[in-house]
Length: 139
Ligand SMILES: [Zn+2]
Image (tube, rainbow, N blue to C red):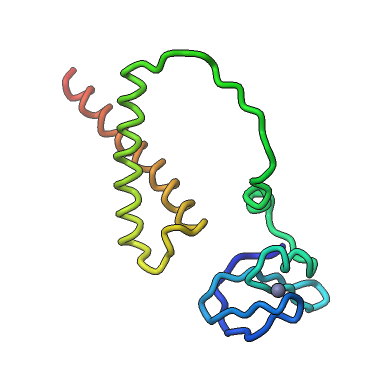
């Protein structure tokens, strides 16, 4: 199974596709049992070399596949609209907090997105505990 990582060395030319990358670029890397390596900055080339990525990443890779969604017909109530506003606030907070905490992580990157959504989940939990404590204090 391959991983996505920052290149430790620059590569002037991939022997398979000819692309070059610099030290620190995100590359796909896999060490095989026979000690050969699959490595490229380009995911398709990496897979052509026999590399594999985990299911989660291949789902992202197959994002062009269509899925059928049936939206139920309903009015969105003000309560739900308030909830999504509340989520927007937490998302924005999480974005800035994680940007400060991981200054080297590109914000458009896959990994930053995962860190951020995990943190949004944590913020929701924190907010729930806070709200519950407030309610219990009143009783
Ligand atoms: Zn390549």
